[in-house]
Image: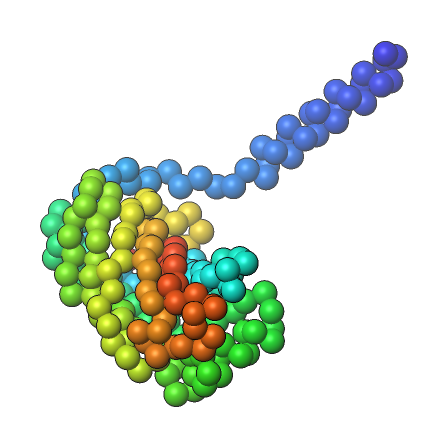
Length: 209
């Protein structure tokens, strides 16, 4: 291998190493390891980093997914006595999205969610049970499509600390659960399009000032 090629390879390696160092994202330096050490108090949802995903069987061929955005809500968090915490989440139905613009519009129509008549899904916790060092089950009332039913959500603590971008103290959870859409009066194409809906929520909360 001649000296020119060796020089080019060395320069290329140096370039990428330098670029990688400059491009590395800023790290959160004060991440809280245990949920018991998270700051006690009132939090509000960070709507830019909170996602509500749903998945349902589509004629038995696929598990089709979509999402809601612009989520709002509050969390009264008591890390040392998690059972005393309170959770309130509101989901704007018109924010629903899928990979098909036609389907997205159909889901807003009266045959499905009827976003005009029932513009918001609302979950309010009533009972919290600690299930592990970083997990809890939260039971509450979900109002969807004009019907209120009890629902249990499974919550796993992800982490907490100061967001390096906006300096807001933030705590994050992964939330999962299941509902049967037919129980909420959303019965179009049952049972060919599944009744059981899987929910996954990536929830970020910022501490109120």
